[in-house]
Length: 222
Image (cartoon, rainbow, N blue to C red; front, side, top):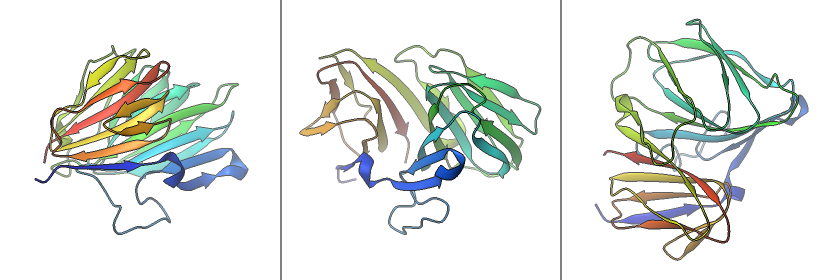
């Protein structure tokens, strides 16, 4: 594999959602009515959506299947309900995973008094079908990987102070999303919403620039 590092800026994301109802979305990949045949997926990652919900706004019950859905709340609180009977309030620092498998329905809402921002990432499983699964990890510790074995992926959450470095996994595919703050990787300066798609890169690291930063890094097998 020839090493490739592809930087995608926040303002390149496709704007979706329904602002009139309090939903603003920014999509990194083809999604919904937006179709780009050259931007369908990166490894098993098929969506990385930044969602902003006003108080009282949300996504009514809708179906999913054959997708691993991982959610990271940036600010506010997300109310999740699904057809398997799970009802959860997801807060900043929690990792939520819904394995939709053969099919599941769920609701996502901002029932709180302040705006909600979250990042939702979808991965394609290696094998379709099976039974739906749900998991939430409360307050995941920094540098503790979260495994999604069905998709051959690990999520690394990193919170860095100014000047701190962290290694980028040596993997077939690495997707790095900047949640907050500014960082530097190689010769690139990245800010909130910016992302890097690295293929076959080795010995990379990320350093926080002038202040604290928060990163989501997916380590994915070929």
